[in-house]
Image (tube, rainbow, N blue to C red):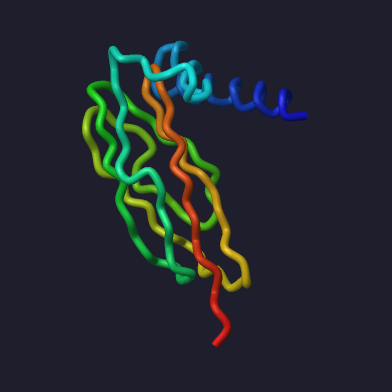
Length: 131
């Protein structure tokens, strides 16, 4: 099952990257970190983890640093991003869109990649505390 999901994700990523104007080499960005970055076009993200309170409307920023194009992929759930593609150093805003009324935190991921590397940024929204 995991292998099928990986192949499906790889196909979707390839199609999206082609539509955004990236070369087919972008699919290499989904390789695990053990393969290391493509040093010809470094990618840096700050911060590498986002944590939000339970209420909707909180905003945080991610600074993306690269000399080339970059793209963001995520599954919209409890947050939105201000931009999904760009070039060079950029600031992207992440905003929570839903209040987390459950008694457990929730987590998702933002995948930021360039033509040779991908960084995964975990996004967590705290649970609503009992009052």
